[in-house]
Length: 413
Image 1 (tube, rainbow, N blue to C red):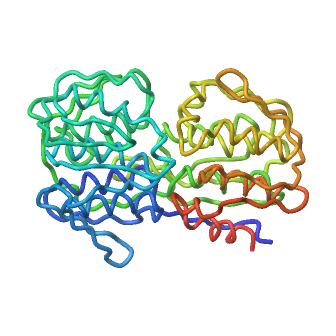
Image 2 (image 1 turned 135 degrees about the vertical axis):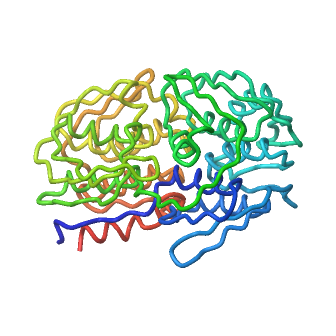
């Protein structure tokens, strides 16, 4: 079994969505390298092309050009992608496009009123009914907006609409959230956006997003990092990975638990911090308490963290995870149910989960709830279980990390 090596990953999903959307309203032709190959990002490509953008494959890169976005001839299918539906709504509202946006059964259960209210306040003409967003031709006015949610998607929706507003928009954040949209706009057009504490000022503008190479997805890397930490003798380097401080909460938590992880060769590329992550097998991992302040920087990694906790010593309490109930599945329920079925003492408690490390998991039938992050987390769990565990749905992994099994094979062959 291979125990060491260098792993490269496809581009970060969050940045891939934003690069495509911003490029579609930019001047000239944009070249995007190392785009995420997941189905969620393909949903964004399909929606943008339906609105008049021209996004084509050029070898391993994508070329994006668009003179002006236009009304699509049919409703826009956002698939399983909440990022596509929420950010596209803001983008299209700013462009004065009329459209109907919808998604699959999972996406239809996720909250969309949180973007409708602020867009309406800015002049947007839209409503959400029957699990669809109906967007009429809008004139975004700008002004002062308060984001009461802890969602970076809501913030990005507002920012994308603001780029085409009549006046400056001043957005006040109630919580710290991922800042990829601000960083990307600031890198290519510093005068278009400014950030001062929790206030973001967006000036209406049109600029050029020329070339961008997207760093490796740190959320996808988390599953492989967990495997390396738990697999005796492992020593791997993950190359050119996104190291945004709002995205490395999982890595910081593993280090607090005793994991042998280091980040080196850090540099800024296209406005984001990128680096190499070195991971060695950790013989002893000790569970710790996780607060809301910790969770906000690893909200997508809670499923795989829960798996690591089940194989570590002591008890882990993870608090402030109500947002997980609004993801592709109720991830709190999914985590507790599957850990229990594998023989681990896991319980939902108030706004959190309590997991007592059991050091040994048992084979079972895993219910993925058709959620890509639950599927990947519990596939990793199955590799450390006694016997053979099976998942009821492997296809959902295609949403974000189609290379998951290939990359895992690189680490195991």
